[in-house]
Length: 468
Image (cartoon, rainbow, N blue to C red; front, side):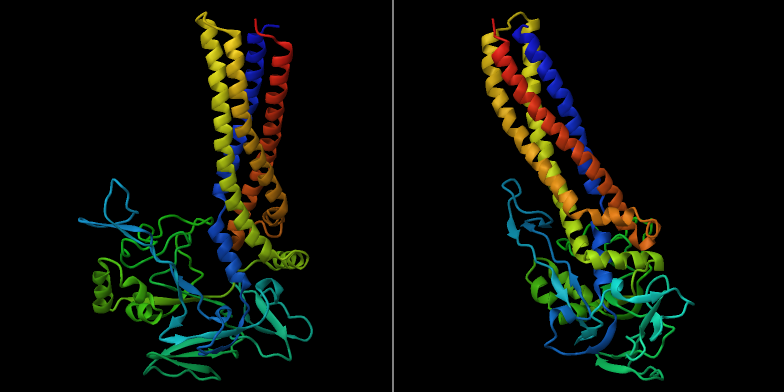
């Protein structure tokens, strides 16, 4: 068989299989991009808190015990030019003075008080809950509505219930009747009680200027933030979450407070004050007396059947650890898939160049077997390296899938949990993991096959098909 026919057939086979591998990696990349990291992280944060049993104003409070765990998101790099501040780093073309980014700043104070929480050392998945209207198990008592589905928390009869009522009483307002724990704050009293077993048990607090966006990629500001703030171009609820909601109505606004005082109390002005043009924002906050809100909510609920399934799953495999690995690994798979795609594309372009090169030479009657053999050897070794890197990256992707992504599939494939609104982000990720798993295996097999085709065809060509 002539050398020309040998390399034509082998490269045609290689490029065909490589195209299948390329399509598979693209699908993996798209599927990993569709996984909903923010909703999964939000669910993990919400479920990981235990119900409140005490609140103090201890200035030596440990970070893990802060009642309010929020943050001001910081700023991005900017460039100070004659025309003003621009939202990008300075380059040679856009000369100016670089403005360094500011890291996120924790928000721990509300109304001038650092609130320290003592919680039940249990997550939502560890709690005993029953459907609203059902009886608690023996030696347990109902303590309040534990989640967004109004399921009831059952607590040991000998123990005091967690807080099931929280009020903020402004100075001059009527103080409610009951046995309340009272904390003095700037312009108000914060009051907690555990005597209202028909009320929701609050577990989580956040600060927002307006009703929070359902898609946590965005923030709902009253006015456009400073140009370098992280959410400057994401300051409205522009896109819905997995459930199609624009606003997250699970949060209830319970208080309003001066945003100027809030920035001052949490040390945000200490960092922001060094930025160019920030005086205008500072003065606007001071003069307008613009308010930010304190929002509260209980747990994002699931049905009793799904809760029981997740409890069993949590006992055998820590669900929160696996969810943490899930979000980290899906992001990593996205990066690895991109690199694999680049490596494979370079290898394909190299072989495509040679494939078109010999056809052009043959058609123009200037084809030389010896020169083609030399080019084939050089380009074959070059493409072999890129292809090997792509294959190794696909091996890592498959290893990560089978190590840590099964939690999303476990929940996605469980009939009791499939229709839970609070799990939509996780279920959507489960669908993505199904695709990632299937097409990653295809990509791995095809890259391995291609790897062998390239190696074997090169050996056969150079051993059996001698150039004329």
